[in-house]
Image 1 (cartoon, rainbow, N blue to C red):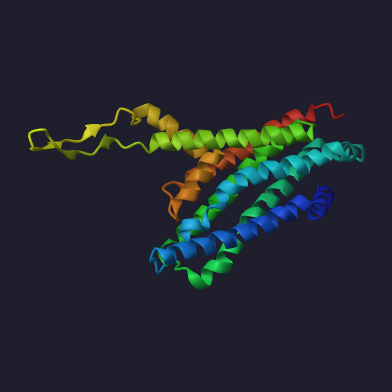
Image 2 (cartoon, rainbow, N blue to C red):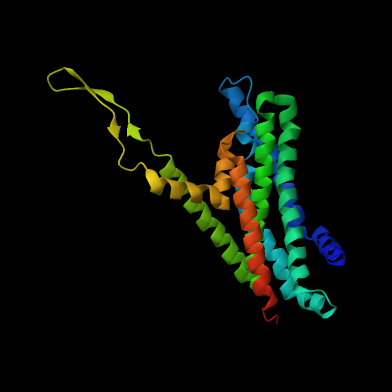
Length: 280
């Protein structure tokens, strides 16, 4: 296993797309922190909070990871590397796990580079509320686990599909679909329970006060629990939650547990099918 990991990490270091993603994420962090600071100064915010832009990377990696994994693992098939690994005696389980580990670390590096870029600008300029530092660290760790879970799903597709172009299309389209579904679910959960009352002027000139009205689109009971479950379980839903959390989250442990279950199940299924796959 150590030889496989050494070879894959050596390949990772030479991967141009990997370095482009690293530089891009760092520059994105610098840009987001600088632009947000300038905007807050224009609006008269003397102490802008770093949490407003700190977790934006969670949504960015939703698209970076599928693209990177598809290219990195797809090259293994197109170059015949996987077949060569099996010929020299490496088991399919170790080959699968090696790719998963290397791709997961690459995803974590993307997240970390964004954070480094943000902190490089934010530390001398932003106000950091020490009361929520613990919450920030917990959410960062949750985002890392979410990143690994999303990587595990992409590796599952990439290891079972030998066509690099098709893998990239499937993974990126799946990411888009899951993100749209997550946004839809969050919008449904954000519906107010009641519409607030308001005052209107009648034709006779009298002021009529209308009472609060129940919202028919508000989710209740079991239906709301189902929507909430998928909102917390789907990696893109977690990414949206983490991005909008602003340093606080009601159930970070639950998000991490769901991500861990995705990692375990997808890896188990992927290894099971990959062992029986005919490698061309």
